[in-house]
Image 1 (cartoon, rainbow, N blue to C red):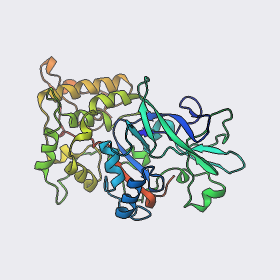
Image 2: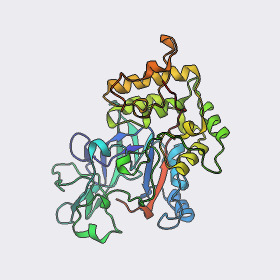
Image 3: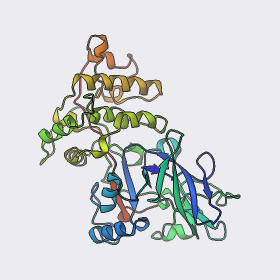
Image 4: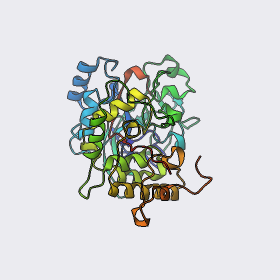
Length: 362
């Protein structure tokens, strides 16, 4: 999906077209991960009507992953013809780029770009897409604190107006005006922990939750093999669960191809167990040798990007270096390094699930 939450001024600009009804916004591409859709901003009318019919006018009947028609169409690429990705909301970049709110009243600024569910195409710059966002005239909230509402010239903010929060109509200092609010007992598998994501698994590894078929979980891993036999579920897990905004290209390499796969049981396990990167550990799934090598290499690349891979956090998804004798300990880091929208109007979607391999001891 595309993340336009931070677009407006440099470096990712939103530039008005001459007629003023569309802004061309440069947005960050998020290769895979959990995302949210505002039910009031679905730009495909047929999909909007289908979603309202199934989920209710506030979306309250579709709070499970991929339970809304709009999520299904975004995932399979049929939401808007010709779009390579669709703009939605993701927590993925909050740890590095922040979150907040600046309230902009009508007299302070005129137009803003409403990028939710806008169509986007990739550019020559890796990780940046261009989205065609309709513009609106009226009060709005920016997703960062202490910003100038009027950018001047031909640039506008990518923003939104929270119609359901009276506080945001006048003054707003909280990020609750611009982002989803999760109930206190809910966590999102594989999202950043500080933004409501579930924790990585720790010892002791729990037993499978009731109703989970571990045979099906492991089969979904095995079925994720690409043309040369690498099980993409494992390689995606090795990068996505610890990814940051500076390694999106690496995540794309590790995860490309998963969007077409059926990963239902892995989703069910993560949601039930309330943990991230935990399905294969809980079910004892294993990866083939080619995949083990790929995981080892991806961990090395993350370390080179100053990112601590999951292997260095909890000893899982370490892989094996078959180019150096096949010892799993070769994948470990050196000693000493271990170590705007209310939830009831949001629909939860998933581009691709991060999947996981069982814990390997040194």
